[in-house]
Length: 321
Image 1: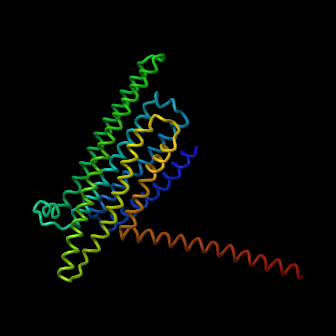
Image 2 (image 1 turned 90 degrees about the horizontal axis):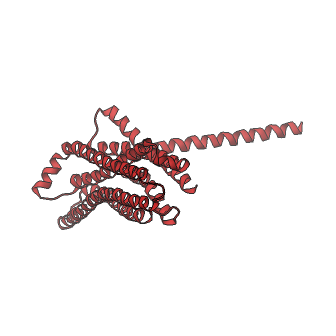
């Protein structure tokens, strides 16, 4: 019960955070008629996370109320496949964002890197399209593996339960293998981006100390490093959670499985919140909304207090009369 309540709360929080990002960027898109590469990646990332959270919550809700329906109704397998597709899209688009920060901000004299820096705005749409196609392909493979599992369970007799368990474990291992591929590739992209930015920052700082100059790009380096390092920490925990999920997936009730579930479902919201705080436009919009909510709240509280004071004065006047 606690797991379900936590998932409901975390899904609601994460959906609101990502919906905020999508709304702000869509409004900017309508006003400017265009978006830069960073905003395109953030918009696609928010659009991937919202349906992922919706499909994942619906799947978990139905699996808790009607657990046997997962073996009968194909629609639930489709829900799981959609959630898998958007989750893989989320991971790879996040990795693309880290790679974009690295190419855009890091300074290297390599000719290939300079070519990427010049062409990055043209490469980003194709990179995002490739990420979505790859996520779709792997989610289809996962769906086929799940369908094979259902056929094996259906075709196996009820008395031969041991054989069903073995087949199910093999199928789970195959599913986790595909998930591991997605996590590993995106994880390596984030590691490469973090190391490259650290090396570029170190070189840039040494050059500034030698020339005794101040450069505004230092702030850009530090801002990007904060974002990428936070992504690296979260991806490291994500990878650890995948390993723990493989270990504890066959156990129904386990504290470790609960902790893994809590983190995995909080990841999209926390990650998006970091993105908001590291983006000046999104941070400004969030502070503006919070200030409006704060003013509205205190005005309502002030009205209630004022009404209470007037009521007490009126009651005191009536009693004296």
